[in-house]
Amino acid sequence: MFSDIISLERIVSKSELLDKYSTDESSIHFSQPLIALLPKTTEEISKILAIAYNNDIVVVPRGLGTGLSGGAIPIKPSIIISTELMNNIIEIDTENMMIVTEPGVITGNLQREVEKHGLYYPPDPASLDSCSIGGNVSESSGGPSAVRYGTTRDYVRGIEFVTPNGTIMHFGGKVRKDATGYNIKDLLIGSEGTLGIITKLTLSLIPLPKFKYDMLIAFDSIDDAINGAIIILRSSIKPSTIEFMEKRAIEAAKEFLGNEMPVQKGEAHLLIRLDGDNKNEIEERMISTSEIVKQLTGYEILIAENSTQQEKLWKGRRSLHDAMVKMSVKREREDVVVPISMLPKLISEVHKLEDIYNVPVIAFGHAGDGNVHINIIKTKNDNGSFDKYYNEMIKKILETTVYLGGKLSGEHGIGIFKKEFMHLVFTEEELELQRKLKMVFDPKNLFNPEKMLP
Image (cartoon, rainbow, N blue to C red):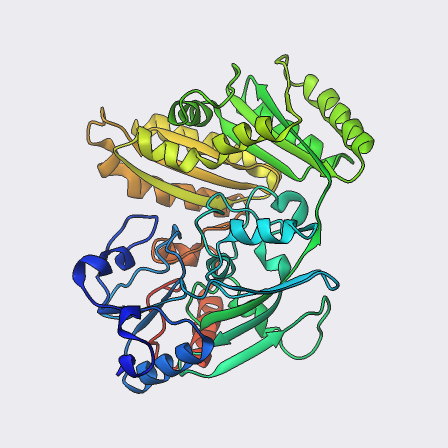
């Protein structure tokens, strides 16, 4: 029946080809989909969903499969609808500083295209050269630049999506203010494919900063590094990024890249970017940053002024997830967020778990907005502690996060893996309200079921 809507070459049915649609970057498999459909237009998706809805077929929406929370993994027999072929930029509107795009466009490609017009799309997840913009919106992705420029949510101005029964909806548009009706658009952002399939996006842009400088700063302790970040944030320096990497993370990146990553001694590093249009003003901010951190560290500050030097630094930062994979037999990673002032306490408590359970825990992430990526590592020398204790460790990490005023995820989403912990954040009445909202969009519960909500 689906072959009446899309051509056979866009229907994946062979088991060996379906395997990639049964997992994401978490590498967990639950169930192989029955088929995967690769539509190219909104109208095709609408027709496919109408058939699926009328025949009670479970549907799992999917972008490029780079998610980390299992949101695009089928749990039960279902069909995958992938937007990977909907990869066209429809319009770059330089007058209104907006871009209209299909969801399958790779985020890094979108950034490079708008930069040709002197414009800038700031959200920059680590996987920006492999993830899709539709997936970013579905997960409400962030990235290093969130500290100054905000997350994906802050740039979505309009959404076209298709509901589970095949109805095409439009909310928002090329406007920067909209007080017209309920804000349905924002419900889709971060909904992890549980309410509908995004088919078109209108995103706001800003002028491309003319100058940027990066600073890599080593500290003798994690507390000194985080305190330095907090002091900088409270100043008038206005960094666009403040990334935190503990010593073992940056050493792993160095080994992964073949010693390309510059590393100094010290237990923790901050990677700080300053950008803007006035070179002298940026240099003054750089001097102010140096004066602040010199009170906390005696290490020389590495400054990257040209693109080659900057690329080395950021290649190291963006490779950290892959570096963790290389150094481990198995790994569990948590993406949590706390008030920035609670970062030292969170990281301290996390490292206490390492001592208690004899399982390595390595942290890095976005010090500028309190979002930390915590990696629980199974090494070649593991004596069985990882398999025995990692579930208990994850539970304690999430409980500690919420106790400190934080949330279960800053940018990777809830998906399959954290839904059982949603009660830590929400009351039963608050969870029930969210379930009812889901049922308004999807009364048959056919759309990406068993995700997000327990």
